[in-house]
Image (cartoon, rainbow, N blue to C red; front, top):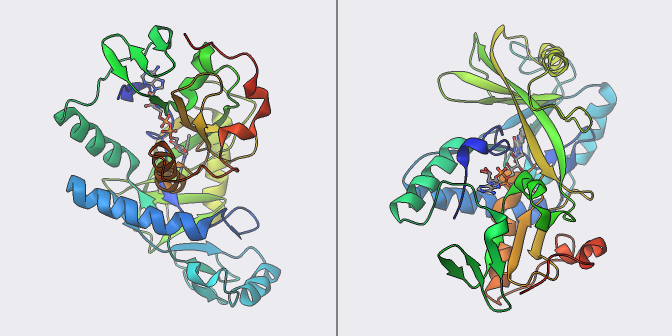
Amino acid sequence: MFDEPNQNRSSAIAAGLFNPITGKLLTRTWMADQIFPELFRFYQSAENFLDKKFFYPQPLYRPFLSAEEQNEWMGLSSSEALKPYIEKVLTVSTYSNQVFDSFGGIQLRQCGFLDVSGFMGCVQRHLAANQCIVFEHFDDDQLVVHADEVVYKSCRAKKIIFCNGIGSLNSSRFEKLPIRLLKGETLTVELDEIPELIYNCGVYIVPLANKRYRVGATYETKNLTRDTTEAARMELEQKIKALIKIPYQIIAQDWGFRPTTPDRRPILGEYPESKNVIIFNGLGTKGVSLAPYFSAQLVNWLLGRGEIQPEVNIKRFKSLTSKSREVV
Ligand SMILES: Cc1cc2nc3c(=O)[nH]c(=O)nc-3n(C[C@H](O)[C@H](O)[C@H](O)COP(=O)(O)OP(=O)(O)OC[C@H]3O[C@@H](n4cnc5c(N)ncnc54)[C@H](O)[C@@H]3O)c2cc1C
């Protein structure tokens, strides 16, 4: 593995939240019934394997915004499809000491957060101890792709898997790969009180180490400056103030880019006309929940034990099939 952890502007910035009911309309996220069991299995076994704690399942509370929303959820809560994810529908204000929830809210289960930096640090140390990782820039121009193997400097392998996120945008090899930047900014805050659950409405408030919390995030497609902005700080502050009553102090502001795709689904499979060059990208806004399920799918496919499903298969992008770099 080649990696430049200091250049990481996505996983290293992520709050690591996972939540099966998302969006303004509070809908069950795509493939939640398959993805969430795998997420729990994967991170729990990773904790055992790496002998460290970084996976924190925790209930999440989303206050209702109106009486209509409350009514709707009283009906929806009996739906078989949503039952596994609903702890309680609260029709009266329940956490009013900490949040604005005059219409009550929905308490969700199978939620929580991954300490992404902690997890990545453990994986990197494990790989380093086994001499499997090189912390240096991978120079794509030096990769030679043959019909039956790939060669990079002194390394030879049957295949190479690119999980380089937004790094794919710097490579002429992947100029047709439809990865788009979605900028996100977050605030690190200190709170005068410990929240009873993860609160999420417009923004999430997710624990970090040292009694600090990450508040996020913004979703910006146009202003893609590589820095924090006053506009994002104001947007996040406005949303915190609408959600929590707990006094807070801002400690830091951060920014990152999510690697998204036009149809908001990951991209898996062999890069067209570059046999043995495999892509695992496009995790977008939900890398923590999508990565365990789809990395397993990719591995099964590589080992000839299964297929890549059409919604995430790279073959769905017809524009990719013309004139990419040729096989030697
Ligand atoms: C502000 C923000 C908040 C987010 N919050 C959440 C959240 O709460 N929950 C969630 O599930 N997701 C969240 N995300 C999304 C999540 O971070 C992404 O889905 C995920 O990080 C993508 O992971 P990745 O491994 O594909 O890419 P990356 O994390 O970008 O990893 C790619 C790695 O490849 C390396 N690399 C690239 N090119 C080269 C090269 N040439 N040589 C060597 N190394 C190279 C990079 O340095 C990097 O370390 C958030 C993202 C942002 C920006």
